[in-house]
Image 1 (cartoon, rainbow, N blue to C red):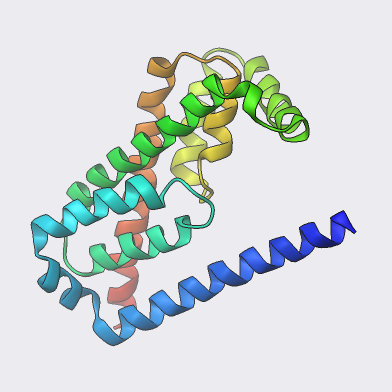
Image 2 (cartoon, rainbow, N blue to C red):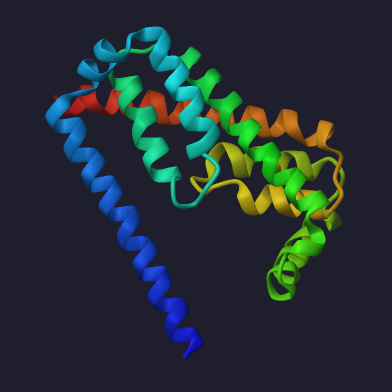
Length: 191
């Protein structure tokens, strides 16, 4: 019974994410990214990107809408370097919350969840010292998944925050730049 409920929850979550993406896509098609930028203004668009990155880039449920928003802002004409930098700062700050949650909230999680995270954390800990930051950069910079699990695992593994956060930020910047650049260039190929 519990496995059936877990499957239903996964399908329901997937359906919600797909619905949000489709609804956002229809909204962007009807309104247009340029109109959004004109309405918000350039400065407010960067501020919106930061706030959406801070909140939206940290959760499995909101990541897809954050990526769509970032793409829309890039297509709308914002400078993709500035947009990527501001978004990377927001996402890195959100990721920091999960790192500290992992390092301070060890006793608050359920035993089964803690076991899974401990396994991942131990795997990370077994990597050579130079390889962990490289893995963090690759994960945050090239893999389109939320950084929650990675950051909680790093917190559980008692990694030093100041040694990891530059690689998290660089990875986030690269990923935000890739989304922005590919969105802008992809739309040029279509139209």
